[in-house]
Image (cartoon, protein in one colour):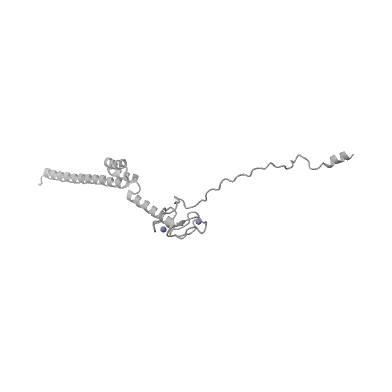
Length: 194
Ligand SMILES: [Zn+2]
Ligand SMILES: [Zn+2]
């Protein structure tokens, strides 16, 4: 007859071992979740407070904390955000490089001096070598010649405002005032005749 107490103690030790295994597994899982959350929070936010709060959430609440963090975390990582911004900038540059008149959006060639549609000044010619230059450039990149006064940040050349027009001096006119009658009314003539 087998020793019951021996079996029981054996079973107990096996159970203990299993519990210890599960405990260790859960502990490792907990640590892994904390590490993962820390890394994920760091990749999504530069804010130290947010990172600490995220990790604290998982440390305190374990799996529910992790779920909560996954719900509340920023939608995109910093790398994704950077990529998105980069793509946006590239698109913007692409639009800028598509050659159109900045005023009327008429299609223009890159070497046009003036918009053929609205006559906006688009480029200037180098004083020395005659190549087409950006209006803002103060020096010709082809021949190194300094250019005249650069038009800072403007593509439209506005003529200088005309001097204020002088109002013509009003001459004292000797026009007959409307009150003075030009001719004697016929009624008065009739009265005089009688
Ligand atoms: Zn134009
Ligand atoms: Zn030049």
